[in-house]
Image 1 (cartoon, rainbow, N blue to C red):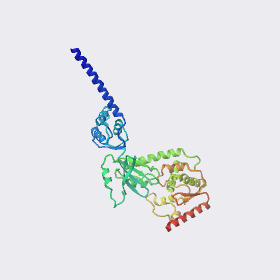
Image 2: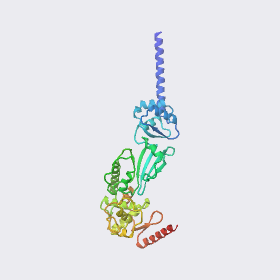
Image 3: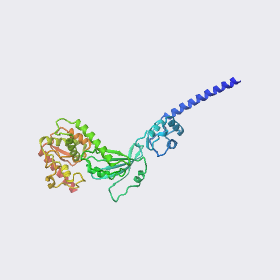
Image 4: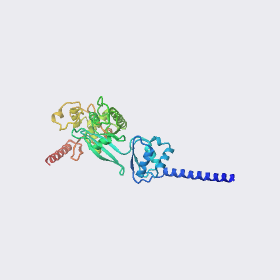
Length: 386
């Protein structure tokens, strides 16, 4: 009798173990299988949250088939305690295993709200954007001028400022001066600290930089300076042969002039060729942006046309008066202008003038240039008459 009972018990135990193993294998397959959600979602994990709260959100969004399996899987992977607060983009069809990895790996939030401080040459703007998970693009929700006295920040800006997972980014325009960078940083109210000294002109890389609330303004300048040093060193290392430039510093000066002369990407190397040809022939550069810099020294914009007396006025930067390059850059050039300065097009151009389309008309001879100038004067007169 006892043998019969023992035999039945062993049989039952084998069946239980077998069933348990099957359940575990089924749970593992569910945890790693493609998720049911047909669209990406933005999952916000609040500070102080836990896997139970997160699993309920995922269930309500239809991103997981079972919150219990999600929690058990995270526990088994020993990731439950690694949950990170933030807004996380969960791709379409992400498995529970994928989701666990996304919300525990850390780093900057990958979706949700972003505040962009755009620092331009003549203006500044704060833009609040949110990620549209359907398109994968950030859509603008609000924008305002932080320097305007009569404009108050929109309600959405005040709201997102209280969210711990809001991302912040500063976008600096190419051709901005170092003084303008420092002034622009003053309106980025998530940063802290004062700037002791305006950095040397040209030594800051205009680009987009992600920052965190509480970062110092000096730390942003350091990052910009480090980035520009890397860009300049790489460009100078790969420079074309035979350039009339003696150093990377001279290349930076030339790049800053190119940056201020054209906003058309396709003609940067043509503009560079004009100045290189003039340097090789001993001609003065005769470029208006250097005259303007001699007047303002990078502190703001001139806001009017140049006078004949200013074109003739002696300053260290007036290339209508001085020979060769000015002593310093006149702005902070972007990567493309630096690369154009060290690798110009091969042309015989020594003149250029605006052509009315936003670009320039180039010429090899003075006669051809005078015709281009006459055409430009006609365009100006037509526009003034309309």
